Image (tube, rainbow, N blue to C red; front, side, top):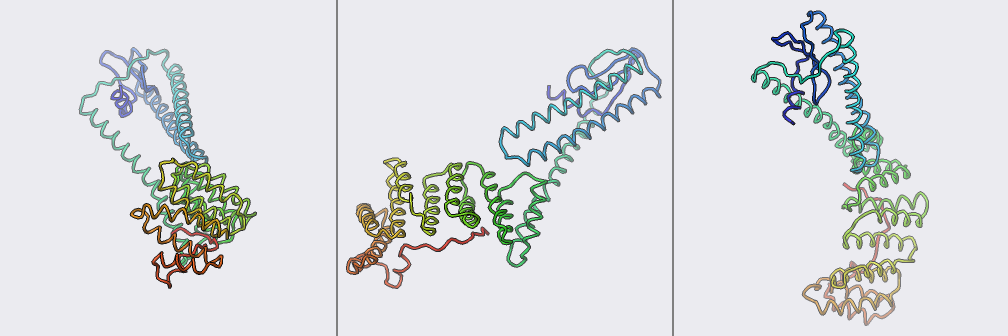
Amino acid sequence: MLKKYIQILSNPLLYYSTKDGNSVFRNFSLFNQTGCRYSKIFEKPNIGKALEYRIGLENRYHLYCFLTIAVLYLLFIHIKFSIFALLFFEIVGIIIIMSIRLKLSYKYHNYLLACFGEYESIEFEPPINERKKEEYLALFRSKIILTVICIALFLLPSLLLSFGIKHSLTPKHNGYKHAIVMSNIYNFIYPKNPKIYDMRAVAHYMQRDYEAALKDYKKALDLSGKRFTKDDITRFENLLLLQKRITSSHDAVDIFNEYITKKKMSILEEAQMLWIKSIFKIENSIIDSILQDYDDLLSSLNPKDTKNQFYISCDKAYMLYLMQMYDKAINAYNALIDYAQENEKIFSKELQSLYAERGWAKKRLGDNAGASIDFNASKIPPEKLPEYEPQYQNQQFVNEK
């Protein structure tokens, strides 16, 4: 069946006559009864006019198909990508193209009736040898290759635009306006790409257009889908900063929570996102629910997943220190150090940090003797101990290279 359709598509003939005095015109059908047979031979001028009309309809068909595909493509790339949307536009495209073919087939049918009268529908099977068929197939394959080349040439500027945007964002060139213009061109012609929105967000931020930058990061998060990627870390960090600048820290946390629920993450990724949010909340004096968030994450773990329980509990103790809850931090470190000592082969490196962090918590409470004991137990050189004190830096815009 497929071979038959390929032969129909590859055959360029539109008319043939048979030895027994029949004339057969090719119609627009791709399936059964592709020919229109008359039981006589017509004069060449009349045949020529019919074929010219047929060729004119064919040219219109190709133009309509091109416009249909172009319009549906532009509509598709400007909506949120989904398999459902892709299938919808494919089905709509097929329906429109087949409707155009049927319409033109009907017009040619009426033309033949007006010029030559009634005809019999048959298969269009011109008497050509195998060599000619192979030539037609070779030409058809060449057209397919040419189409693929044209598609590749169409996609090539997307790579050039992407490189141009990235190049414009380097401090040396400082071409933020050019980056925005090129990203707008890219988004109009090509399917939406989260990376392009990331770069345009940077350009908008550098021009102090924080609302546009925030909008770009939200769009990038939507486009990246449910799967969490390393690029999402930067997006979420900058989302917090930008929303805070535009409205408030509380709004920033709310938007963060809204978008984070759309992502499917591993336990490690959840812990990483909770760390980012918790540091932001501590920096902006919104310490409510930080401990509850950690408790919720810990309760969601498999009881047998002791390793992740340990690491997330370490993060929680760290946050207790940053919230200046030093007594609670020391209690948390006591339990963590006991567990790490029981499993020293696995957590020897962590044990060193835990001693140092507990020592700093004791020092903050004025227990210098206890702090010294912990610092000595950590075996960290005194000059490096300040590096182990729990601390954070005020959030800055992250420009991913």
